[in-house]
Length: 117
Image (cartoon, rainbow, N blue to C red):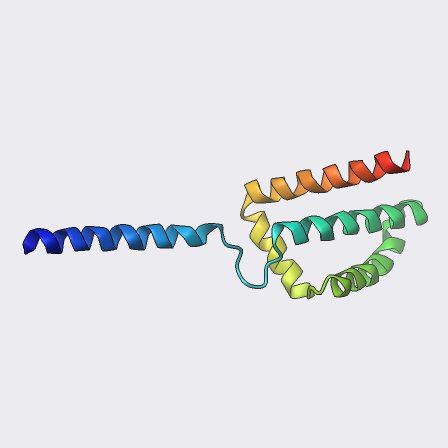
């Protein structure tokens, strides 16, 4: 009987550890998933580039226009500013995921440049 109880305790402990480890890769509620981040950041970087060129890199003139465009971009993507800030905070604490996202963004922007050429 003691052996059976010990075995059940070990199996239960292993199950709890396995299940608690499963949640580590989950993105918390209110955080954009990686693909949403790639989509959003790709569009955001294009916006920033557009405004930089249009204002001749006059960043004080860019800020108001960019802020309004970000708000529109967030709305189109169904993301609140709080969700975006939560996402940036989450991914900045998960550098491996953030790096993966930025690599995909660069790849997407490079593909767009190649299409234009």
